[in-house]
Amino acid sequence: MKLPLIPLDKANHFIYGFVIYVLANLFLNQYYSLGITIAFGVSRDVMQKITKKGNSEIMDAVWTIIPAIILILAMLLSQQSKAQESIVVGGNSIETFGEVFPIMQTIAEEEEVTLSIPRFEMPIEKPKQDVKNKSIFEKILDFIRKLINKNK
Image (cartoon, rainbow, N blue to C red; front, side, top):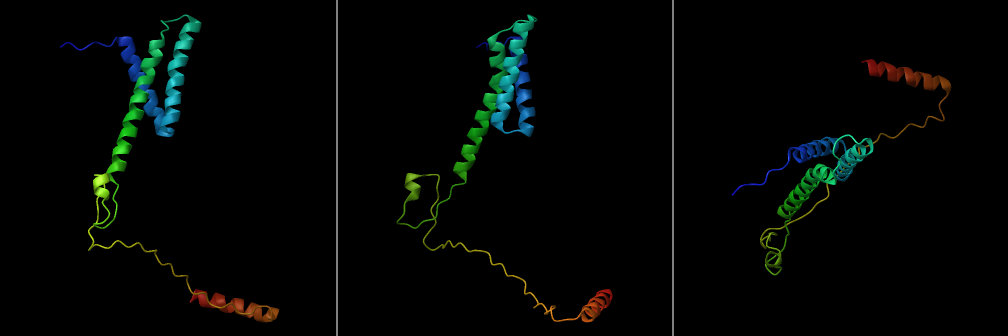
């Protein structure tokens, strides 16, 4: 069986579309990257048509866009399979999730699943001294005492 050959021009557009999509995807999400790939593919054809340099074909733009679509579909399929693998359902022998959804697992009755909230303890604050009734002289003395205690 002889495989069909892709013309060199179309193969180049495919490679350029792949590179454009991957570079755009480094900085943007997959849908913006697809938009940029489409913009590059179409604008190249439009420029060839306007300047009348080169051969303007709609299939050139299509071959530029195809790798972006393939990569998006591959990412979506891989995300879906990862999501299905990570589903785990807790239940007992009465609940039969496993029969309806064979991917899901059931937990035996002996095993207990508990969720707890982590505890956070607030640090104990020292009561503040009543500063309002102190004279300026007492405040200065307190400040000097703190400085001396800090330097020890």
